[in-house]
Image (cartoon, rainbow, N blue to C red; front, side, top):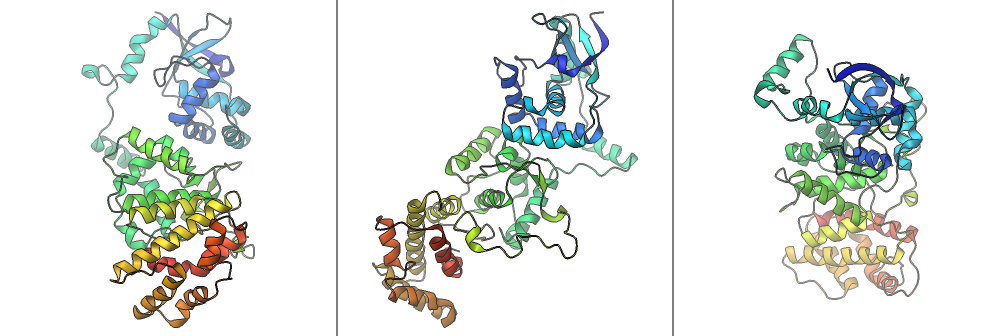
Length: 433
């Protein structure tokens, strides 16, 4: 017959190094990394941990490992085998972030290491069966997936909520509005298909730190997630956006890699996933979260994660995005340079849009800007900071002092830059939008 049922300890099953899901690799560790990066193994592991086992409807196929007596190689079901192996031994994961993730799942899971498999006498015996499983309908012999009608009938008969591909996208948009990353109007007019296609890819979710396909759970610091998701959302609604539903998988992943290269995406991982947004569990009465009234100077970046703005000018947007992503404690001179550039360019463009010729010197332009904003309905109190900074050249947040820092006259501090942003945030909100 060429195959038979058997019960095998999953620790004795090796991943296939020539799995068609990825290019051939040299070690099992490499195979694990490829599957973790691109094949949703984290989600599979979470599902197995919650259920306590893999699906009884789908068999794992193995063949004896000729190089190691008593061990086997997975021919079918490599993703599930990988998930099981890491749940049973998280230390096998190739990266510390993955080890932390699987430790958190393993603590709550009870997994039997012995699983039922189909053992083939040779690889050749398995080829046709694997083809039937993965190469489409093949005239009716292969797997025929359900269409929308079949799914609807199934969900109706068993009283199940249908799987909505937009669930995660809607939760992200609700979160973004609640955190003031985008406006309610932008959320209502958002190109949902674009976001769903982005969030549907495991590589994109991994870049952002999202660990689920339908729940807003992240394994990165929330402030870093806010910066990343805010950039993706604002890019998607910007004029002449490169973030569209017409992009293919490779183009979406290339866009995310570009954000990673800019330093916009999260750089660290949490020890275990946290749920954010509307699904976040409420704190008990009397135990408010410590971040309710945070000291502004404790934030990592100059621009607060809650600051939301839509910028249509491509150059201004690039400068703002770089300023938003940079850490002033690590890069003080680059930070002050970006801050002054944004102030210079934004004030100039705003005055031009109002039909005025901007003054060459920035401190003179501040007075000009104050006049223009006041004539547009802003109060004297709202524009007073501009008049103060235009006249007090020695104030460390004045245009002259910012220029002094830019030319390395002295070292700017994170605290100074955060104070400068907070003093001018309402001005930026007006001249950037």
